[in-house]
Image 1 (cartoon, rainbow, N blue to C red):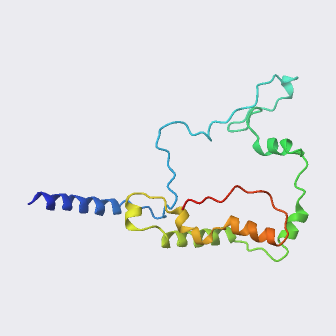
Image 2 (cartoon, one colour):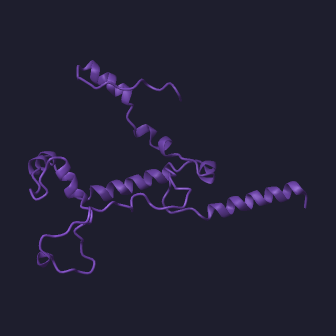
Image 3 (cartoon, one colour):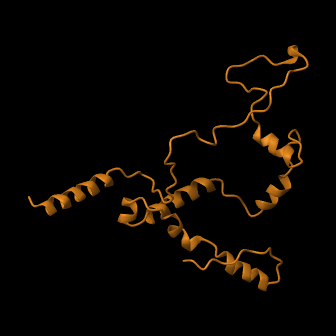
Length: 171
C-alpha cells in the first residue's frame, strides 16, 4: 500500500472515531480548564471563629447541619446592600406589576428546549466541530443587540445615556 494511501486511511479513521465521541448536547462555547487544580468557586472563606457568651445556649450539633461560621451569601449580600436579612420579601408589588399580563408557568423548560434545538441546528461546520472551534458568538449573532446602534437610537429620541467606549473597528 503506498504511503499516501496509508496516511489518508489513518486520517479517515481518526475522523470516523472522533465522530463517535459526540455528546448529545451541542457545545457551542468551549470553555474548559486546561490545568489541573482547585476549583476557585469551591474554596470559600469562612467567617472568623468566635467564642460564644454562653456555651449552654448553643444548639445541639446535628449531622449535616450548618455551622456558625458557614458562609451565608444571601444574608451577607442583603446586609451589604443595606437590608435586613430577617425582614422578609417586600417586592410583592414588583412581582405583581411584572406579571400583570400573565405568567407562563413552564417558561424555563420551554426556553431550554427551544435553545437546545437552536444549538443543535447551529452546531458549526464539520471542521469546526472536529477542531473544537468556538462557534457560540457566530451562532447567536443574529439574536445579539447592536449596542452602538441602539445607543444612537436612544440619543436621537432624547434619552439621556451614559458614555460608551468607542466602537471597535476590528472585524
